[in-house]
Amino acid sequence: MHFEIVGDIAQVETIAVGRRIRELARLQKMYGKGRWRKLKGIAQIRVRGGSSRKAELHWYEAHGIGRKEIKRKRYLD
Image 1 (cartoon, rainbow, N blue to C red):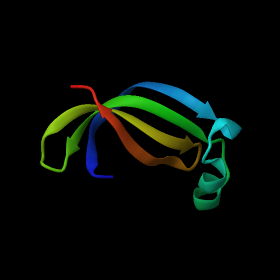
Image 2: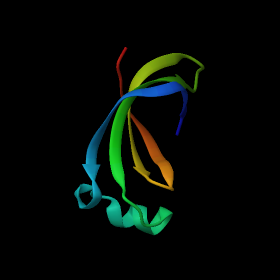
Image 3: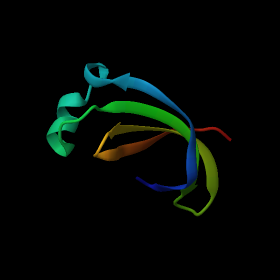
Image 4: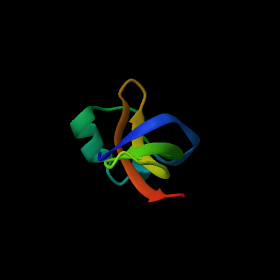
């Protein structure tokens, strides 16, 4: 991750749950079994150069395991 999330993630939406996640087997092997969900949301991030930008983020999350593999998909500003 080459950015830092500044503040909260807003407009969180579920993209996929359980077997609809292509990476489910890998996630379970790396982090453990759980009710995995793929989510997306919008947040203010600080990039390497120190500038702050608004971006769409995607990540995986499971109860008791937390957020994993946060990815920046696109800038919104």
